[in-house]
Amino acid sequence: MGEHLGRVLVVDDDEVIRQLIAVNLTLEGFQVETASDGQDCLDRVLDVMPDVITLDVMMPRLDGWMTASRLRGGVETGHIKVVLITARAQEDDKRRGMDIGVDAYLTKPFDPAELIRVVRDLALAAHSG
Image (tube, rainbow, N blue to C red; front, side, top):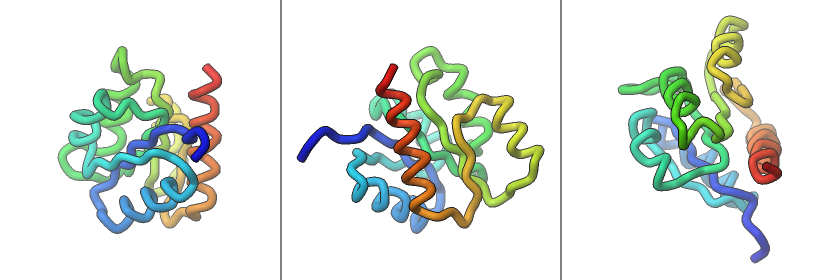
């Protein structure tokens, strides 16, 4: 079985996309948990303690921006790697992501191979201290 690559919390209000990401990462060797929106993510993050969180930007209740900000501001969650996934690739979006301190940025529709590469790199960085 080997050592698992890390734990990922996949946050998206679209079940199809959530499952797509989860399946791809699971096949790659990650332990995957899912959450249906930002509030669900914040409610569960301390139980899951993921190395990486993939975060859809457009979600009800609590969007990706707010969720990422709260994660970054939390003592126990500030170190978690965050990948923002958005349908909008505008520069100001990217700047906003950088201001919050997200670790990576993917635009929908994304290539699953690209997502895996980004998550793997961040998980490795998380484990190397």
